[in-house]
Length: 383
Image 1 (spheres, helix red, strand yellow):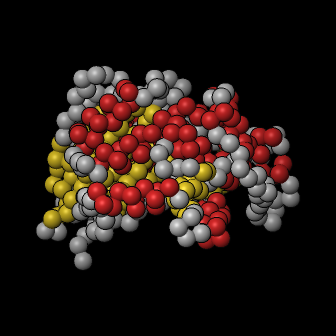
Image 2 (cartoon, helix red, strand yellow; image 1 turned 135 degrees about the horizontal axis):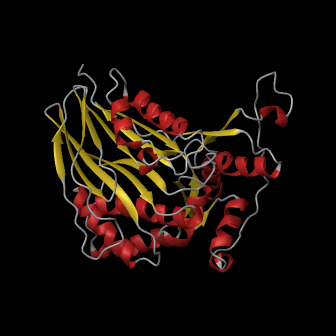
Image 3 (cartoon, one colour; image 1 turned 90 degrees about the vertical axis):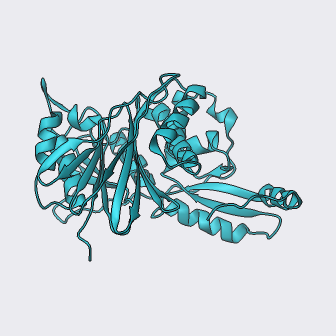
């Protein structure tokens, strides 16, 4: 659905609606903050005087960034520890936002097998902290650190990509270090009309600063895609936004647009300083397109589109440099090892995405130096 051209006579009504509508940044679809925001919207609804609009977001850190920088977000539900992290990087954050309600602290439930009798028994074992961006994923590791439980293997459930008819899509993500650092790798998948856009990026740096720019990049890409789904044009627009923004950070990015006509998928991709996506077909693998300029670094960047017609069983793999530049001593993971893994036959999209992440993490002794993000597309057999 798109908004039609506004008539002059409608301007007053639209302004009135916006005046009493409050955008509330909540959290991910499966999280308690979104449920709470929905309850707030239902209870406080006051017809033409007040309407709360809950907004699905990627978690507490992004909520702070959205509240500071994104139009349409007036209120946000955040974790107090995420605000503390922002205060360390943005000292005057308290002057830019205000508390209106302090909620009761949520409980962190730790579920274990019967043989685990204490937190000490978790030493060296894997502990899953839910999906990246949820309250548990953010606060859980901090609580474990405060309790001196630093020797567990921290894992997370990656966000689930959308369902695309007639196309498999899967993603894998692992933050750097023990898996609890806030990094700049991100991916997104969304639909504009009959076109699907797949985005994988890496913002320079880590921590809150990178998270703020990641939020800006993600929202800017979605906004630009409304006007054009051509990847090179989106990258050009994003480059200008980053240059005009107060940040000095840049990013690498690959954007793909996919359309299906006559039962066949066509893919157009453009890359900005990012590792090239890989097409795997009939036991062979190779990069698609050219590297392009870093995004947000140059006034006159060069972005070129490349188009590929996909066939049944084709796989397209997008990844960040945390995969190929992973190190074991003085040895790099490298593209050769990655391509050998990608050519492994009979893997669906989810199996391949998880295999790449697991192999890259294992290569680095379970302590990757950089974030690792992977998106895999696969054309399944037709019915």
